[in-house]
Image (tube, rainbow, N blue to C red):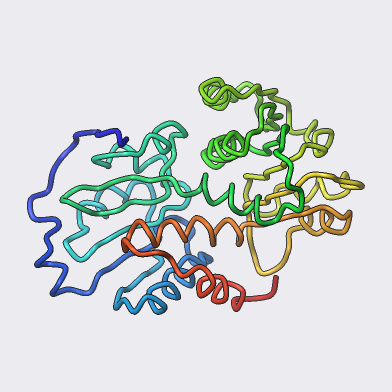
Length: 292
């Protein structure tokens, strides 16, 4: 069930006739945005699906977001959002899914039926990335989440969906864990906030998710000696992060931001086009960019 925010309606924003006569557009917004691999994934999907659509990476900050959204005409079908826009977009939407509202973060906007509709595909993307990387069929019971922002809220929802009941939170400022604690209570998950200095003592969970920017968790690599759980480091680049590298060398299963990027984009493509996303075409395109 979607939660309607009942803001403004824009007459004529969408019509079937308009769709027949214009090239459909989609884009990823954020700042910085030049490094984004979302165009690689979405363009590969459109090509495989035979769609004459465009998908661009556009530099948009919080102050520019309202004007940009208001300027989206009938040719726009959807937007992907990166930081810092996942929360800033909320008051600009007509509807938000229950999941997006619950975690307070939306990474996908679909233009349809004259409205702007917000979705969160990060949660499902994390769950799929972890499940695909894991070599254990058993349900995880414990998790550690590194970081405390919007992505951490999605991570908490993801581990709750996996069946985790006990979560350690490692934050720069544990006093700011209130929103995460409230969300955990809503999802019937026990949480234990810790300072960042204690993070290295909680890497033995069944699932560990690093939700921080690239390089932030590199100082934890030397704390990885033997592991039994699966790691997801949401940051990505052209090479493995130091934490992912150390985790795999210790014999652990790991996924990184490219795996998350793939799976959250799979759901975005389906939402924007109404078609099943061509997963393997998207994966091949992503693997073709740099070295894993």
